[in-house]
Image 1: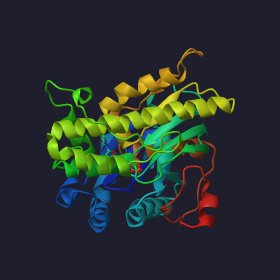
Image 2 (image 1 turned 30 degrees about the vertical axis):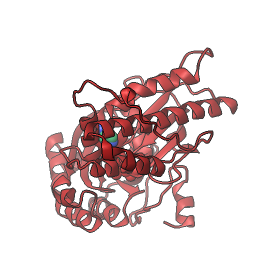
Image 3 (image 1 turned 60 degrees about the vertical axis):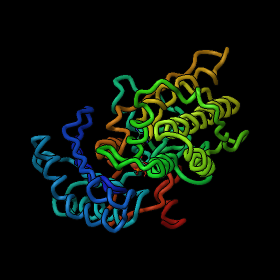
Length: 356
Ligand code: ATP
Ligand code: FE
């Protein structure tokens, strides 16, 4: 079964072709760095126009790279939510119009579930359900128990902003430029540039956020970073922030593993996904969290990451997250609306009732 998927929830215009035998035939990601650079952040009206201009070309290129025509496509998927309403509407409209005109089945996908399920495509031997997933992206920071492709249980979320957003705002504070891969990646690059000192060498204490609680919080850390960077180089400031942010992730992940164990569920695998999961420093530290949480009791759960280019937004993950529904014949009617606030643990029908 071959799926063409469209994604436009934030600032990347994406189209991809993926088949049920796990082959990624194409993966087109048209970044809008050129559009948003001057705002040092996503400018929503410009994002909507850019998606509208670029989506036809993304679809054309996805088919071209896959060496396919619409005749080879068995189903069409798109990101229905969560995301920015006007942005979501572009893929929603394009996908449904294509599906209706060509009489193809349609599936609307939850973007965060797609981030979570990417690992089940990229790992030849995927982690079994249920597993514990840390989703760290531009709009979300949460720990979720993934029981199946359709069943998610929220363990912890952020009390204020998402870590990806904090990375972006701290990078802007440090005066970093929106590079090829965005501000968050620019911060990582700056923090890992060569020097003789390391974050551990500075005599500056960074705050521990919400100690003793399951949830995340990044506003306080951002405020503190703003104060301490006055006397530091960009590299030092970047390193201090990144190290403190990752300590919070490892702490909360270790707590979540313990919480799951108390409720008699022993996580056999930890999955980390979303844009911030492409950060190599974070990857190097999270392994310790799993080991620490298991100290002395059984084997530490292995930590899985999708390849960095599939951690940030793409349509491959949307195609893959729709596959089990297409294969089960569980498809959607034409005429769906975007669901900008669609929560990962709510079924679509429940989300429609609580509003968008
Ligand atoms: P969401 O998935 O929550 O709707 P989004 O789709 O905008 O949000 P993603 O594409 O998953 O987010 O991730 C983008 C975020 O990841 C940005 O905030 C970006 O700064 C951050 N990011 C990307 N690469 C890195 C990196 N190497 N280090 C830290 N942060 C990064
Ligand atoms: Fe995303």
